[in-house]
Image (tube, rainbow, N blue to C red; front, side):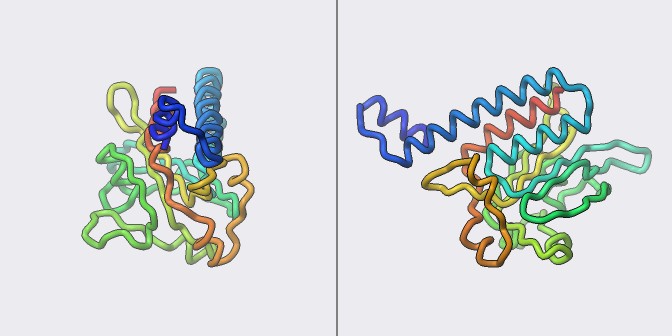
Length: 217
């Protein structure tokens, strides 16, 4: 989309409302990226850092929910620790837990392969994929996880120390606005069908930059 706008600029073609909305949203995203970089340099409290990383990631992508998993090494093996999570549409008291690092879970696959997964609907993942989405949380809390963007947190030496997992983008693909989408609540099956959209592909590189900054910090 940004490439299309740049082409219009070069040919002096008139920008429509969608183009302008995309430019405004992209500008806000870049400012958020700069702000999070400053916070990561100044802040030394790990818990505060996790909250900053996740809240900024949700705001940029219009995500309704998100989680951060951290890789932990122990004598009995390597695990992913569910370190921090947040959901706009429901109030949930999250408890930390650990799970084995393997290819069966989405976060586990991303941490092992070091690749981004951008999934339009986790309920429709092909059965031939090694990773699948487990619906325990959805069934317990009456939620509907649909679109998901999972990004590895990679240090400068290539080591992956965690995964940022974002859920249910609420941005309108025609008129993206991360600021207003954060106020949308998902409360009915119709909301999940009408208001949840796949994560914009341009967020993959942007979230990769944030995740890598966070890992280095």
